[in-house]
Amino acid sequence: MTEEYHYKFTDWVLLVPMISVLSIWTVYWFEIKFQTNLNSWGIYPRTLDGLKGILFSPFLHGSISHLYNNTIPLAVLSAALVYFYRDISWKVFLYGLLLTGVFTWLVGRDAYHIGASGLIYLLASFIFFKGVFTKYFRLIALSLIVVFVYGSLIWFIFPIKEGVSWEGHLAGFVTGLFLAIILKANVPKPKKYAWEDDNYREEDDEFLRHFDADGNFMEQTKEAENTPLKIIYHLKKEDSEE
Image 1 (cartoon, rainbow, N blue to C red):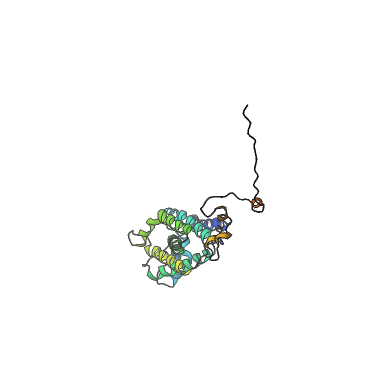
Image 2: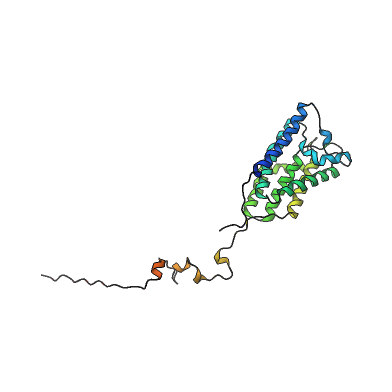
């Protein structure tokens, strides 16, 4: 059985996670190196100046632990997105980043919202729901892996911890679900077996021709099929008694 669409490992599967992780670490290094704080470039809800955070907030982090906690999930989920959904991965990143930022700007509390966690929730949500919607076994398996590894993230879309932008998490989660619904993804479609074809006839099947009407297996070769059956009798004269 062959597939019309194949998953293909490309350089982007490694480059996208590497660029993403390098970007957030470079910005944090810049803040430490030059003793500056760029939090004001984050999303500040319902203010004109806070709109710039829609583009810049995913690159900003308040502490090394905040940065570290976002690094591994960002690398793993972005690699999975590019590998399994390469045709629409750029749309998920671009549209997802903008929609998550706008949603956070609309519903967030009056504070600077920073960090790549909104993007992480976007990726986790999209990969999970898209796998379920496609009903393709490999993508469903991927969805289950996401649930197993990152299922606990669901609790942080609610205001259960002080100082955490649950609004950004919720925005990413909802945006991922929305994109999973509206974006069409190419998934492998297996070709039908010959016996699944509407024009299939048993007498044309090479394999079934090896069985007789009673289901007994008959060894056949092309040479044997084209050679008339010959019956050879051997006569043996019995020894006479002395």
